[in-house]
Length: 138
Ligand SMILES: [Zn+2]
Image (cartoon, rainbow, N blue to C red; front, side, top):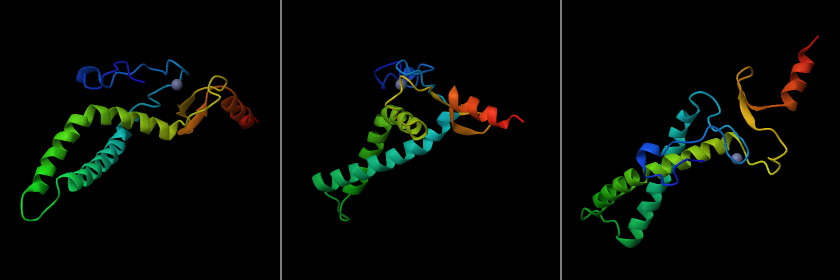
């Protein structure tokens, strides 16, 4: 899905081919499609923080009498920043999966693209759209 296998090469971390080399699926479904990944990334960061909090609680412990909680906040912040390139990539994969689900027959069926006329993501190039256009004719 990404041109550069290493997400921590920051200049290239979000470089993607236009379409999937395997099935031809367009990655950026419409202009500005990737803006929505911000919400996915937020959710992933939240779950990562919950996980790191639980791990910290089990391994280091949390107490109101010392500053262990604030150490966790610092370590968690560093962890989130360090994991950011990976989170960004995972967000794109998850976000695309919300709109385009896996099709076991992908070699036979056409790719799914955004239809600017109806504003829906369910246009498939080929059969389905031609059928719909046919019905609209008087
Ligand atoms: Zn593919």
